[in-house]
Amino acid sequence: MDTGHKILIIEDEFIIANQLKQLLESEGYVILGPSDDFYSSVTLIAKELPDLIIADIRLHDDAEAGIKISEHVSKLYHIPVIFLSGYSDEDTIYKARQTNPNTFLIKPKPLDKTQLLATVQMALPNINCKTKIKSVSLKGKELEICDEYGHLKDKEKIEYITRIIDTDDITFVETFNHHFKNTLLLRFSQNKTGFLIREEMEDIQKLFPNNFLRVHKSYLVNLKKLDGYRLPHYLLIKNQEIPIGQKYYQNLESHLARFKK
Image (cartoon, rainbow, N blue to C red; front, side, top):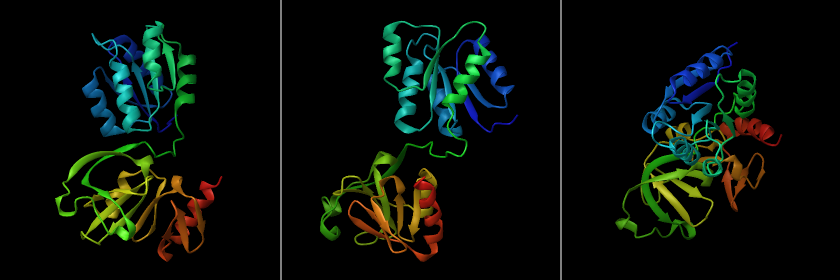
């Protein structure tokens, strides 16, 4: 059985890691790793975007390595984490819970296959879910947006910075040619803020999760922030009317039908 799901194993005990790998591969899962330290784990996560992570809390001499990895994941990705640990003391469990893992497995030797598979199946997202990216790193300029984009914070003195942006904070992206050409303006939940970047709309859409939809040649919107709409004319987001391009209407209509279910 080929499930199509990718699972990253983070475990420093060879016997446990190998058991996990064999048990999950026998059920058709694609196994990444195993990795056994923070750096190799976060590198694999960024490269492969697994559907699920099974991580030991303690790796080598670091009693909280798995917790640190889970904290990293929770900031940047929508990827579920299962903690695997031979330690069940209250302090460790408390710290681990702060990273909002999906569940805990206290590892017996040998591993309980029935318990493992049941836990994995419950934690895995739908195979069609492509919203693994939670945050993106973009280089641009912070803006303070006033009426009709009349003022930018410090104008020419604005410096480029690299900012880690949670995509859930973005309401929509628009082409912006008032002061700068060939750029995009990211609009946030707070109406008075924006982030100016030099990117193509198509490239930005590839970075963002699938709840971001192109609705006009000049607009990419976050459907999670939708306040209302008047089809086929416009969408309403944060009291702003976003025009709907004829080229994009049919795709938008099908997405809205699924979105309402």
